[in-house]
Length: 161
Ligand code: PNS
Image 1 (cartoon, rainbow, N blue to C red):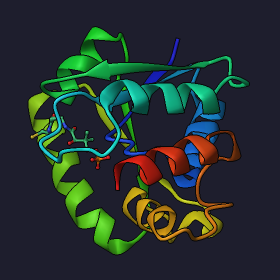
Image 2: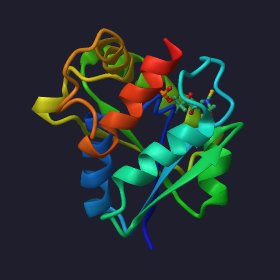
Image 3: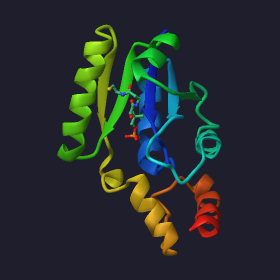
Image 4: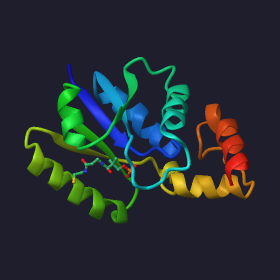
């Protein structure tokens, strides 16, 4: 069974993330979306909220599940019985950082492969940060955030910001 892990902060999950999830689920028998639980980035959405938001978006994808992880990604990948890390690339600027991460992960765990998936054209400009800003200022987030969770995200941002 080919199992892949798609890791991230997902603060919150966007249409860009969901695009990568859906496409990677066609390539692998199982994809585990791994939500980082010890981020030093002070996420807006709590860990539980980030997991719940992703779960709402993947109800129709049977070979996808959401889990949390802390510590090193490669340790989580090994524990999950996976041997592949999936990363989405939007631009050359993403590549520089992701390339370093891929090399470090390869050094730590030579048997684990990183697979880069190029984001669809219609998601190239989407990031969790811009989505939060657009919602904060009352902009239209359709096509940026999965429709199932737009209301949850807007409600949270109105309450918190
Ligand atoms: O969505 P993000 O914030 O870009 O995701 C980053 C993530 C979670 C993939 C990355 O921070 C990570 O892998 N963290 C776990 C710690 C680790 O293994 N670091 C890489 C080796 S130094």
